[in-house]
Image (cartoon, rainbow, N blue to C red):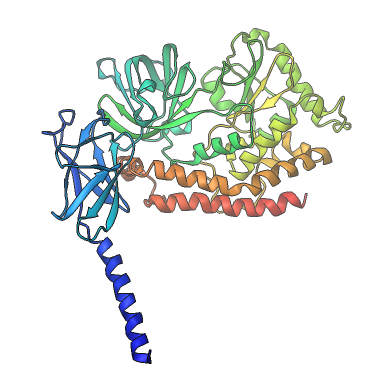
Length: 501
């Protein structure tokens, strides 16, 4: 074979491959659903191509288990689903999951696959709350009577719930934002969207967090590190009195109860919070010398221990826990604080302190520096645990974006002293190596969560974008990338800093 023949052969093979590849991309396909074929629909819906998928977004919850599609292809193309030949406006399929359409050319046998998925609204569960007489929720103390309805969507219809509820505002700084957080209270324990039953729930707005992922990322880290209890949550679409309020995070209320804070019936539950906030709500509190020393501002108390409601004790029963906390602090700062029998290890659950510390140091959580939302619990016959983790909408660099390479929680009261013990530091290093080695899992969680919010974030930010501060990004993909970049950089700095201890 001469050189020309070899060149011609190569060119012919290349052209055949090119023609085959090119032909595979030329199957024209469109699909949608018409009201005339599907009585459950209130509008005709056409699919929009999104990468390799066709997405049909239905505006209202409907049963998508039996839908008939109208599709269009060239006349020489046959269409199949799971090997069954399809007829436009006749064939019925279950769209609770993605459906793969196989297009096959009768003459050449060439095939092309198209994936079609049906999304209810944005794909997230939907919660609708109608207050009595359509009253506006303006108070963080007084509850309003309301009707509650949840559509669980792909979580499963058995996890939907309809019934009466009481609702009020909640939060401190977050209550001042345009997008308000809420507290829900039911007359009986109800399980919402697959989470264990309780009568108290929270709807977090995450207004200041454009990624909408900071709190759920901290929860993921807490679960990954195996903390005894981590708040469960589900992202939802919230409607109040018919008005769409955007993406919210339906969370368990942090409280002592079965499947929640494991303090037991006779245990104690505490929170460190700002004295100003505590005084405002007239909550019972106490303080300690070191907390007072670290957080005092002028003549006012800075942060204090707040006595939270538990299953059994009242504040009159609190003498024992006050004494225990003060003895714990005294042991932490004593000369023999490393003693196994009389030092701090006799009073605190060290593992919980290490895991809690890592979540908050990685996230550079300003509030966790023994200022606010720092929880403790103590079973009646057990040691003092720290946790659960809570309040991260301004963490992960949002509050201190330009100061990620520094210690934050390490310099807090109690925590600072623990670093003087070689035992604590060595245990911390072991746990850090585990977290750092698996850091990709945190980034993967963020990616999968951002994909889950793919459609909902757009609707949410369309509602609230005009109220955001000008310095915030309006690019969701950038907001997610900023969160991931912060974690990557923060963990790289911490890896050097912790391993050098």
